[in-house]
Structures are given as structure tokens and as C-alpha cells.
Length: 608
Image 1 (cartoon, helix red, strand yellow):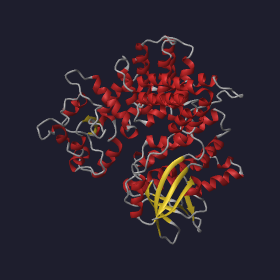
Image 2 (image 1 turned 90 degrees about the horizontal axis):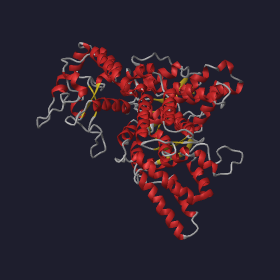
Image 3 (image 1 turned 180 degrees about the vertical axis):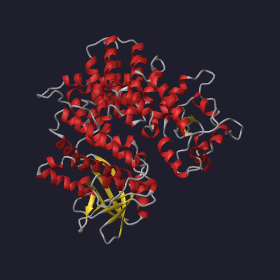
Image 4 (image 1 turned 120 degrees about the vertical axis):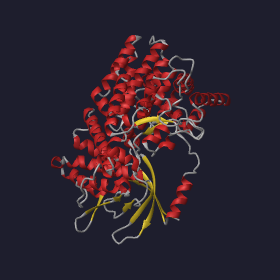
């Protein structure tokens, strides 16, 4: 049964006066969150109002003489990530301790007590204990000790930097540096201490719902019921209701309802996330024009500075109060243009380019594209020009997703700025301005090459897949054409990334012998350092059938009906692999260098 349900701020969950110790059962699934999850959590809290809801966790109370021990049954990934982030904030702040005033020193002291519990003997112990899988517990202990948070000495584990815990911590340190620099540059903070304290407070105010139950059975039953919950009322439902309520008579209400339905059908009637994104991007793309209709009251943007998930309802309520019918008609007009972007309109010469842009996660640029398509005549742009712009955006997003430069949180403001800069331009000037801005904000070639040469699959598997598929598609003919982006009945890709040297922790003996001359520990080291490099990756439609097979089996494997399903499947990417008798670290390095050179040429600014 449920013992306790509480809606708590992070600062209350990690209360300095609490003796609660949270433990992830020793043999629970390892920490699996990646860069996309880390960025999403960080950006959601930074971009939204204080008190942002981060989700829930379920725990089971266990007895202990040293305090209240709680086993985390659900929410371990989020809990671990929040703790890593708070630790990164603490370590950054601690470097400025000598420059702090008394109140700031006290805040720093309390932050340490949020992350670790102070015992009577002045020993600090972790408030969160991680699972043993994939050295999660040792990696985490090393981070806490290195940050001077816990007392127990912890040495740096072998291959620490190649595993998720270490990578997450490094990533958060980099995100904090970037956010601190931004706040100081934009006069949101006077110095590093003030900026970090503001970030700390924002995260401490974020909310998690904690549910405490009596047993693992209760936890499982609760978890099942939570995953079969009904559909909640959405922001768009509230906006729709406000719009229709403004109708002056029944006929106008019916008309508004029909137009609303037409808008959603144009965008995708079953895709709420895409629908909400359209309403946000519509405002952000036409912010100047929309605010010109409102009384400014001394504000540049009286309707709202930026449309986000938390500001969307407020902004639309203000716009509806000004002229609901004009707004509805304009939304319908812009939705027709948005549908061209998201629904793969084959009548346009740039439709294939738009598909590629969507595949490389280029949706933030739809702000710019929506403005361009809505004003194509005024900007004097042909469909060929639009196609060129989409190609430039593809180059930008490949480079961005590989290097993480610029950061995710800069993209919305950047594309709004692009809209502002091209508003009074036309034709070639529009194209030149967009290319210049994209190039200026992107990472330099040296960083792009460095990241391409690194653990690209682990850093961004989707970007790795896009690059491999793009390279393959450059060499396809009508005779060899393969639908690399086709999905099965479960909406999973039929063609997936295959690691030649297997990525699993349990390395088969045949691979230990081939890759490391029988040395198991050396093979493990090679797995950590080389397995996710571009040169060790290819594409296969039968990944699950290859996985841990030996190199020879992977090359020669055939299906029951005698079809080639191994590396001799005719793909360009596999031509060099099938000619090898063995697969070694040197060959991974050589193939990485070869594929990096191809990718560099494909996504070079001068290729446009």
C-alpha cells in the first residue's frame, strides 16, 4: 500500500536536516541516460518558471539503524542525474569559496549537506547510493570524493571517462560553464558566484513527486497503474476552449471549432508534440508582427518574450483577447505552410531535403522556415533557393549535433534572430546572411573533426546513424537503392547501426583473441575506447542476428532461405570490411579516418 505521496522541491527531497538515504538496488539496470536526456533535464529547468515539474519517483522504505533508508524502484535515472548536476554546481562554486560572503559560504555548506549526510563524527556519506552495474557505484563515489563532498577515499576507476556516469558529470560541468558565461555576458549575473547560485536555486526549486510504498509488490502495482493513466487536459485544449468561448454566437463558435480542427489536421491530428511545437514556433517566428498589434505598456514584447511550454497558454490568452478571429485565420494560413515542412509535400523540389532535415533533428529551424515559406514572395526566393537554405540547415545541424555547438538552449533565440536579420532582405542577400550566421555560430572544423573521430555513437547515436546512412545514400544507384530509413510494424528502424567489434560488456572469446591476442583486460579497455568510433560502425538490417558473432560469421552469415544477411549485403559501407581477414584496433582507426574525411567533405560549408 502507499505510505506517503508528496510533491516536493529538490531542496526538500535533499533536505539538509534529513537523514534519508536513497539507494538503487545493487543489481538494478545500470545508468543509461545519455546526452539528449541530460540536455533535456537541464534546459527544461533553465527555460521554464521556478517549480518546474521533473517527474516522479517510487521508493520502498527499508529499516536501518543509521537513518531512514529508501530503495528507489522507479526514477533512478532522473534521481542520479539531478545528484550529478548538483555535485557539478557544488564543485564549481567551491572554487570561489574565498571570494564568497558569509551567506554564500553557508549556501555552499548546505549544498554539500544536500548531496551527502554529515554524521556525528563529521564524516560525510552519500545521500544516494548507486547500483553496482557497469561500475556505477565506483564512478559515482569517485566524483563525490573528487568534489570534496564525501569523506571516504575513492580512487579513479579504470576507464572512468568512457562510461555514462563520468560522461554525464563532464557534460554538466561544460553546460554550467556555458550557462554562467551566457548569464554574465547578458548581464543576468554580476559574476560567476552569482550565476552559479542562481542556477542552484532554480534546480532546488524544481519539483519531483515522491511516492513511498510498503513493498516491491506495491511498487510494481503502482508503476503499472501509473503507466495506464488517462490522457490529461493539454495546453492546446485550454487554448481551444478559450478561443471558442470568445465566439459571439453559435455559428461563430462552430466556425472556430472547424478552423481549429483544420489547423490540427494540417499539422498532424495524432501528434500532440508536433501540434504544440507549431503553436510555439508560430509565435516565435512572427513575434514582431504579433506584438505590434498589442499595446506595449512600455514593454517591447507585451504578449511575452518567448513562447515556451510554460508561457504558451498565457501568450495565447493575450492574443485571443486582442482579436480571436484574426488570430485563428492567421494560424490556419501559417499551418498550411507548416504542413509543407512537416508532412513531406512531394510537389516541392525541396521535399527530400526537408525529410533529411527532420532526420537530423532540425526542428528548431522550423521557426526560420515557417517565416520564409510564409513570406517567400516578399523575400524574392525561388523554390531552388529554399532548397539551398534547407541544405545549409542540414550541414548546420549535422555539425551541431556532433559537436554540441551551439548549445540546445541557444537555438530558439538564434533562429528568431535569423528571422529578424532577413526581414528586410531579398534573394541572394537572404541566402548569404543565413549561411553566414549558421557558419559563425557553428563549431570550427577542428572541433568537428575531433568529435567525428571520437565516440560518436555514444555521444549521439542518431547523428552517427544519419551520417552513415547519408554516406551510403551518396553511393546508391537505382539498382542498389535500399530504404535505410524504413520502419517495421513496431515503428523501429529495419536498418540499424551495427558494431563490428561488439559493444556488449561480455566480450566473446573469439573477439578477445582477435582484438587483444587473448588478453581479456586489454580487450575490455579496447571496448571502452574504440567500440563507438565511426570506423567500428556500419549498417545492417539484421543487427540482432549478428551482435556477438565472430568476425567471420558476421561477414558470411546467411538467412535460412540462403540470403546474405552479413556484411556481404552489398552496401558501400561494408565493402572495405568484407575484404579484411581480421578486425583490429589499427583497422578501426584507419576506417575511422577514412569515414571522417568523407563526412568532413559532405558537411563542409564550401560544399553549398
